[in-house]
Image (cartoon, rainbow, N blue to C red):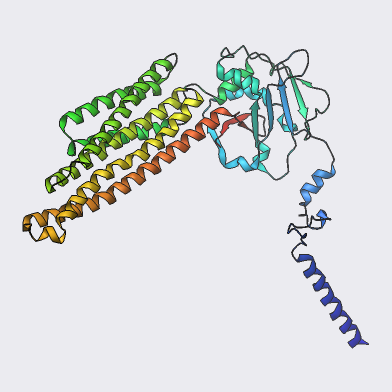
Length: 439
């Protein structure tokens, strides 16, 4: 009997393992290849921690969002919405510099945030609260309609909203401390402090510094008159960059006209270089012509590079000044488009290389002197090296142009959509930090 019981236990264990294996097997699939939906989701659900289960067992309904309104006669048309920040955005919150006096003044707006639901154990969700403004109010703030701090009204009610978007109970009246004139405008100003650098400021300064560096190398490759002309152009461009960095209040149209003038000059310079390359490439017949062509090819590469970088800075300036969306897109596309035309320089290099190879053909080598053969070999070698240099040069320009174009696109998208902000509220109810979602 003992042996029989042992055998029965062994069979049962095998059946149990078989059953577990079958449960862990891949889900069944339909004839079309799609998996069959799980008929019993609870079977594979992750077990909640005990602390969360105890929290859920209380069964107290808590709001997931608070809506603040400045309408006195009824809590309608909220202007500000507050909820706990999402953990998925944790890496993208960028702190905004603020003063303690400003944070203390705005603290009453967040006096009810402790009522918001949250999952125990998440320190981030416990202290960071996402803040967003109604589309109409945000548009008004950006247009300057509520430039006066008293124009945005007094917060009078706070409405608790559940996860379905429905109000929980009746609106709560704001405390006298919280019902202060201009608090909503002050909250907006705290998230959008004046004097903050534009999102593309660092890129603009980087490009401007790179142009200055390229100009310092220009005397090695072009005539003095050319260097002088580009130095004057850079002075004009730098003046616009400095003015835009200092602020564009009331001067946007003037700056845009200057940017237009610089852009037109750059396109004219590019067209002139393209015409010169075409003319010279058709006039390369001798080794002297080929040698001269390579020298000019290097000069044209440097000058063509400057036109590309000047136009790139113009595109960045347009976005910084705040031109129309359509014009910004056109300018951003021109950044990459102008780089594509840079390949015209290869035409001149190819013409010089052909002249050198013709001289090294068997039929010509027999009648050529040793000096001519050495010179032709040197030109052919330098042409090959210059071709590789040109391709690397162009690849770097293209890569940089794509990066700038992506930065401009992302900046325009951020400007076009509603923004999310956040505050950190300590356990004592004090507002400790301000954030903007940098994503």
